[in-house]
Structures are given as structure tokens and as C-alpha cells.
Length: 217
Image (cartoon, rainbow, N blue to C red):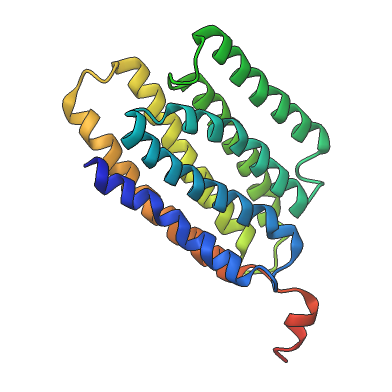
């Protein structure tokens, strides 16, 4: 089961590679999204390697979870700074770094999974994405299935809502129910496949730079 989930987790590399192929032609405001996909793929590779090498991948996961909301909120702001003010970016950075440092000091190690950090940062990401999506939807002239920002926000919202639910459930149940403990990673893998497919479509829908856009006509 671990190997199956690990392979599916690497699917984030598909939209990442597609993004780098289109990188020279897409608009620069979408570059941080490609960086985030790439960081996610690298984190998954390092996580799998760490699991086999040290039988523990919590350090990699904790570091990635700490940085992910900072990058996500940053590229949401780059798409439209009216929806995500600079103060929000600064506040998210402070909260994420503060919770990460606080848990590191409290536990005295990075080798323990920081569930409170996951819940905090996932909640931040969901709130920021919902805010951006709701406001962007009222101003976009594209159909949602062809609008890159909308697709990206939807993928992020679905993925992180399930992450919040999973972490809260595991804390409450303490993983005592074997059936739920088995179902959670399976459901996550399915959601992961769907979200990465959405991200791939979003990458293919990212607007081109003006000079490349004009060449099509």
C-alpha cells in the first residue's frame, strides 16, 4: 500500500513537467505556481527516499508544509493583489514560520509529524483560495474549465479540505480504527490523482505571453 500511494503521490510531477515545458511561453505571474508544483514533486521524492533510508519522512513533510502556504498565498497575490493584500502575505508567513518554530521547540525534533502545523496551514490555504476564487469568479471572462486560476484554486481547496478533515480525524481517533486508517490513504490517493489532473489542465490553460499569443492569429 505504501508503494502504491508513493507512486501516485509522484503524479504531481506530471503537471510540473508540463509547466516547465510551457515555462518560456507562459505569463510570468504563473511562474510561482510552477515552482510550487516542482517543490511538491521534490518533496515527494525526498519523502519516499527518507522513508526507505531513515524509516521516517516527517522532517521533509514538516519543512514542505511550512513553506507551501507562503508560496501559495504569494502566487495568489501575484495574480490579483486586490484579492490578497500584502498584509495577508506577511501575516501568513509569520504564522507559518511561528507555528513551525514553536512546534520544533516544543517537540525538540523535526522527526515528529507536526499535525497542528498541517491543520493551521491547510486552513490558511483554504481560506485564501476560497477568497480568491469567489472574487475571481465574478470578474473572469473565461469558462471555469478553461480558466487556470479557477482550476488551480479548486484543486487546492479540495486537497486541503480533505487534509484538514484527515488530520482532525486522526487526532480524535488516534488511528485506533483499522478500517478508517486504511481508507484514509486510499481516498487521499484518489483525490490526489484527480487534483493533479486538474492541475495539468490548469497548466495547459495558463495564458501565453503576448508575443506568443499573437503568433496564433
